[in-house]
Image (cartoon, rainbow, N blue to C red):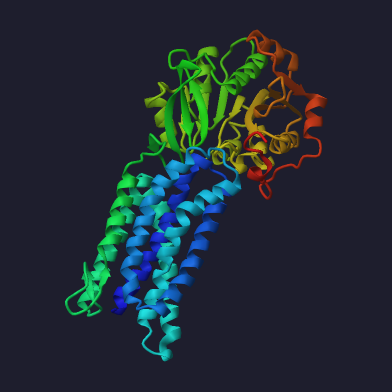
Amino acid sequence: MPQPAASLLVLLSSAAVLVLELLAARLLIPYVGNTLETYTAIIGVVLAGIALGTWLGGRAADRRDPRRLLAPLLVAGGALAAIAVPLVDGLGAGLRGASPFTTTVLTAITFLAPAAVLSAVTPVVIKLQLNSLDETGHVVGRLSALSTVGGIAGSFLTGFVLVALFPTRATIRVVAVLLVLGGIVVAVGLARGGAGRGLGRLGADGSTPLLGVAPLVLAALAGAASLATDGPCQEESRYYCIAVRAYAPDPSAQVLWLDTLSHSAVDPDDPSRLVFTYTAWYGDVITATFPDGRPLRALHVGAGGLTMPRWLRAEHPGSTQVVAELDPAVVRTAVERLGFAPGPDVGIRTADARRVAAELAADPAARGTFDVIVGDAFGGIAVPWHLATREAAADLAALLGPDGVYVLNVIDFGPREFLRAELATLSDVFPHVGVVRRGDGAGGNHVLIASHAPIDADAIRTVNAGRARADEVLTGAAAAALADGAPVLTDDRAPVDQLLTPSPS
């Protein structure tokens, strides 16, 4: 094989592995969640595939003619990449909220094999390029470096270009097709170089085909299976798998799904209705704090379906609001599919909420001016760690007025270690904190309250009871007891994913 062709083959096969690794996250997260454990599983499994493929590919190249391995490896890699799509969609639907172990097993079933097969290309090509022992170091070093360069190129191409421009499943299918076509080209090219027949049956001269018909048929079947699945996303943005679905218990409500989380519910015809319990708790706290219905100045950390901006418009007419949302597609969905009407009273900043809060906190004109801050940003079921720290809370505390209130949704089950840690973190910044939770103490959503002023728990209970609820409101000593002994989260240490319990134990 000519040196340029060998170099290109190593470069592109290694790039394909990293493209699949990054796209694996996009494929898996809508089913198993956007957590550190998910990325850990993907990285670990793909690295295992690279190690396994490199080892086995080198052994196979020593035992067989390496020219007869290359084309089947590329075709098999393409077929396995294509079949990963229906495997994830078929198995993932029953694994929402999966444990780290289950996530790792699902990742291994779907992406270990394509990573291993494509990684076997490099040692096979190295074997082809070794003409003498005198040049072993040069050949191995050059092709190993090109393999790494290919991985870097695949990472940058995927993260900066492909994810932004194309749907995940379509990209994986295109990569699969290109790998199969690459296998055909390699087979034909090696056949012309005298290595044997390119495709088809045994030749009259006794030469064997470098790529039989059977691998191509299997690749075609894998491609057809891949095309038969659509996945759970109605729209795929840079950050989320987005879908809007009817809310089964209430046909008049629509629910915004971001990855695995039913994030927001709205009644397009009645913005004063807060369908989800945790948003109704937001309303209880705000109503109890500002019972006169006066206009408020509000900051929203995360947009979701823009449920609370709608509610404030209806219940506190004349309010001015700032919404910080990282993903413009989420805002567009709220406008186009959930009926939010944009207006000058709601300014939307498509940027990371931590950065928006820091910029506002650095502006003397904004400090101490917000009556309400609503924290409702999530990655999976977790508050993004950089929004859960003492430093983040300090910026929000600087923005909150003397009588204002900061409400934050936290999802936690089991022993509630993350809930306790976040309550301890807010207690380290705000003089007054509290929690609203279900009266039976069950896990799930909890709304944390923080303020510079005393929190009127009785007023919150009165508003809550007016909705025929009997939820629990903890403030003062009760809130302190809940947070007692929990760590304060900081920018240097905020193990949010490890602290929370994602589902009932």
